[in-house]
Length: 316
Length: 316
Image (cartoon, rainbow over all chains, first blue to last red; front, side, top):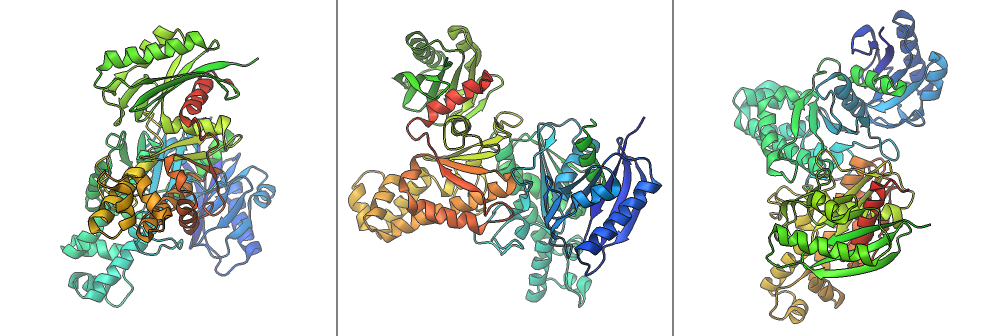
């Protein structure tokens, strides 16, 4: 007989929740818009309401997990900061949600949850030591040690986007200079696109963007349409991503590295230079580590949260 | 009653071995020169002879560990490569030494052993998640997760010297560009000293070095004597070391970072900019992590090896 948990994915625009079986099947699913400008109590109310709806409509669940895009203290059930979700700062949600739902509720960083999702349901089944990297608007990560999520001393481990790749590089969202995220991410590529537009060297990009603000997706569209400047930016980002992965491989010697996130639509234009960068860092294991693409492309957030909830129940 | 193990420290110029108690007391100690130009069998013979001498002269030991400056496969007892010890390449020593000594023998990377040494006998007693960094001729490291040495998939974890700090930086000994070790290490500072001598900007350094090849120690001596160029090089190295430690802290969220190695004689000239660099990387935990200097300054290699041997016996 199957077991079930409630999984929720907290985003800047939507709260999403589902009932998930121990085989990774989604049996019930609801979304709700993130309340704009809401205070802590309204956020808690909106979230609790959504989870209660799922709990009553779906299969009987035994635990719940919220995947949050930010720093989370899993021990106390507190969102320390989630930069893209207004109002989520030093907000202790765990205990109140446990009371409302009548089941154990755990909060986890979304990229760390995604790592456990790949391990339980995705590309990394059976792997002992894993590094998972989410490359989208920002760069996130999760670390699996001995088949379990490694959280570190305060629950903040896995902030892979914030390793320095260039001390003289651009200022990152975190305030430091030259972090991986400041050089390789949707935000970083949008910044490069703005520069190309200002320089006037990419008429294809100008045609695509018009008078809007450019995005990383625009840069990729122009590169696909043959713009060499845009392609060079994406290939450079791929190379730096490979150097960053190589650094992590030298430190952690994982069996496997898995990748997910919106940047993967760039395909080989990103991944080929990434593999070259990784191989150029080979020291010990960097040359032999297996790199795989997510197998949870549709629902990495929900399936990651579900994997954390099942780990909480010790259902293997 | 005390338990005892045999600890050995393999270096490019000396093999050193000792009997060590579970309190970290060294009760017997012998050194032997590393046989120059020796083949695998002569190296094994020299090492086995030294360990047998210690085993017979000292307290009854129950296990032995060799700390090796290179990549080690602890599972098979093989030295994969030890760049500074000629002849130590793809050399399986563990099983032969076990037979000669009649006790379990484990091989470990020296910086990883040093991490476990700090945990058992040194500055990190009682710490759950630790990053240990050795800053000497090269940069090494060891990672403790949940009170145990984290070895990774192949035993190569902890190669902290080979994270990229600058993709356009100098070529590292490992072949990659801009690794932490290529910017911050005795070797890196010697390279900077050669440049200052070639530029003719540091008469103090020239007086100290004379016609020899310069070392990192010469650079520090000139800096202490008031040479501003030399001091700037050391302060820059400290800053980059802090950025590297900050990167590792963001990825691993340890409770503590411990430091050992020859570069620590540079004191505050290195450590003050290191702390500044680390604080500038603060994301989540980087601002609050405790940084401590080794308490095993005299014998980090032997006490590290002893800690690994005790861990093998599960004597806590």
